[in-house]
Image (cartoon, rainbow, N blue to C red; front, side):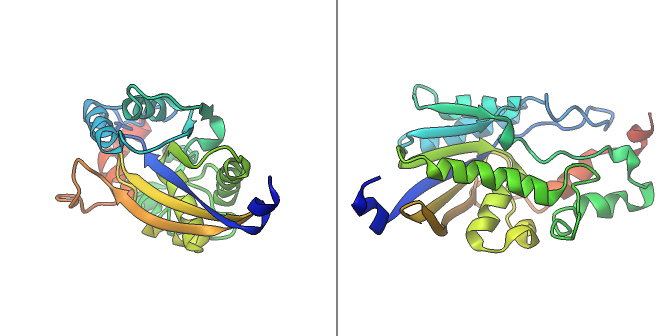
Length: 239
């Protein structure tokens, strides 16, 4: 790093993309393995449409979750383009516990309110991964990216809660504010990050939850977690 770089504020751009639509439950409403689910036909179409919007954007660094739905989304975004890509377990979605372990009487409130309770001491996501540990691994990977000098525009393709953590960091609200950053499938967020030498100064949110297949959010009223609960059939958890 040169002396000028150490004393001059730099600004670099990150494109944060959530994967396209997937089905997390089978036709009987039973949960599928979230580590293996693939894009639905609708999800592939969503990702393709986003790729059309992003095809002329400069991208010289790519990070991607190693889950299939993220990798498939990336393939549809980068058709005919090349950039250094890392597929990273550190960018996997937050891990849920077993839904059948949640008391039936409180299942709806527990699922739909999971983001609003993320900042509580020791809080987990539906009985699984702790929120503070999840936030730690996402921000650690992000700051590792920011420590790399040889890129100006980076693409990160991952998941709902991953994007929420990064956007909440940029907004300075942490886990307490992640419920506000709704992330529809195949959405684009644009985040600029300022640095002074090795010191990261903060972020600027340029675009939030943009979906080219439905820019006005027509017909979208439920949240990610409300939609998850709607697809679940509690009786299937008992089988």
